[in-house]
Amino acid sequence: MTCEELHQMLHDYVGGALVVETRTTVEVHISGCEHCGVLVHSYTHTVRVGRALPRCGLPPAFEARLRAVLEPELRGEKPAG
Image (cartoon, rainbow, N blue to C red):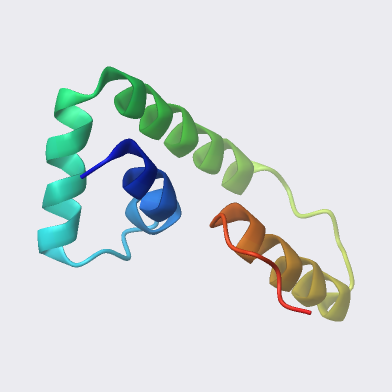
């Protein structure tokens, strides 16, 4: 696994959405790559802090549209549209 491949699946790794074999491959890479280990630790911490923040009370439809735009960006994909 390359660092770029790990970056592309970081969101799924931290979210627990990877199959066991892929998760194991990521963990092997992290154990041997200091840069990616720090990245995963930092990203995981950021997600935890973000989830602990109070909701800002956006209207549900607006929040759904905002998430639809942000999710592909967070995954490194091009937004639809």
